[in-house]
Each structure stands twice: as structure tokens, then as C-alpha cells.
Image 1 (cartoon, rainbow, N blue to C red):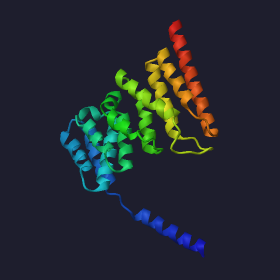
Image 2 (tube, helix red, strand yellow; image 1 turned 90 degrees about the vertical axis):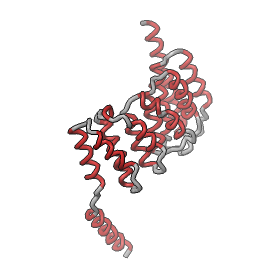
Image 3 (spheres, helix red, strand yellow; image 1 turned 60 degrees about the vertical axis):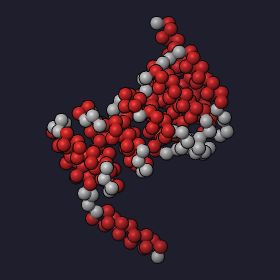
Image 4 (cartoon, rainbow, N blue to C red; image 1 turned 180 degrees about the vertical axis):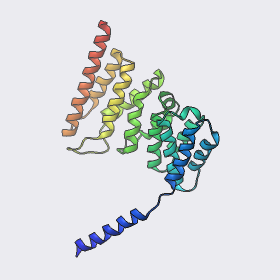
Length: 237
């Protein structure tokens, strides 16, 4: 009987999914295509921006998705409000919208990340394990402003050496892995013995309590070794 109920429920859900017509995607795609045809048409950009100010969640979500897609296609240079658009999205109450915006920001390049760094940094303050913090930690590796790079490196190394908020002996916490990768990218662009010392100090602070910690500690040690070899190579050359 349970199997029959499950089967009937699955069929009803399937029929519902097939009959559902998403009217927001065609609306977004129509605007996107108009912008592709003429990227300097401000009326179309403004139409897309009006979507993110809508009271309807799906208008907002697909509006931001449109901005992300056009950023991926390198069309953001035609619209001066891109930073303001994504800054608004970073402070949206819905994580799905926030993730779309972070993905879009990653396509705008380092300068956009520098301007929005305070908002991005705040998202990592509690070191939560979710798709938003993973994406934020990942894009910080693009930072090339020296002052912001110093602050970001400290933050990323603190995350890397801290106990994850998600604990499992078998599944690795993703946030600290993304943080370490970005810390490595920043270190490569600002490589000195002092920078390597920061990595070594952070590693010493790390507590190893399970197999996941042991695997990550090995990754940390390998990252330090790579930086040491890179610094040695640059010094010799």
C-alpha cells in the first residue's frame, strides 16, 4: 500500500512539474537577448534592473540571474550600475539570490571584489558551511589590492586553521578547503618569507581531532611546501 501511495504521489508531482509554465525565464531571456543585440540600450538594462526591485521573488531571482549571465558574457562594461545591483543582492534575505550575485561578482573581476569586500567579508564572519560561504571564500582568491589582500589573507587563514562549524570524521568541511585555496592564490601574488610564516603560524594553531582534520592538515602542509618552493625558485632566478 505504501509503495502504491508513493507511486501515485510521484506521478502527480511529475504531472505538476510538466504542466508548470515558468513565465519568468522567457521574460528574462527576452531582455538578455535584446541586450546582446545592442549592449548600449540602457532601456533594456533598466528593464532588467526593475526586475530586482519587484515584490515578486521570482522576478527578483531571475533578474539577478540575468545580470549574472551577462556578466559571464563580459557585457557588464556597458552598464554602470553593476556594482550597485550586486551589492543590493548580497544583502537580500534569500541565500539563493546571494549566491547568484557572488557568482556574478566573480565574473566582474578583482576591482568589483575590492569594492564589495566588506559585504563579502561579513558573510564569512560566522564561518557557516553552506553554498554561499563556499562561493565567497572561492572568489576572494582573485584579490590583488595589497591592503585588501593582507586583510583577506588573515581572514582566510583564520578560517583554514579554525574548527569547522560542520563536523564529520568522514566528510571534509568545504569552507576551509576553499579558504586555503584562495589564501594560496593571494600568497602567490604577494610571496615573501613573512607570508609563508603566516601560513605556518596558522597551521600550528590548527587542532587535529579526526580523520578529516588529518587530511586537511596534509593539504595545509603541502600548500606551505609549494609556497616555499616557489619563493626559492623566484629567489634563485
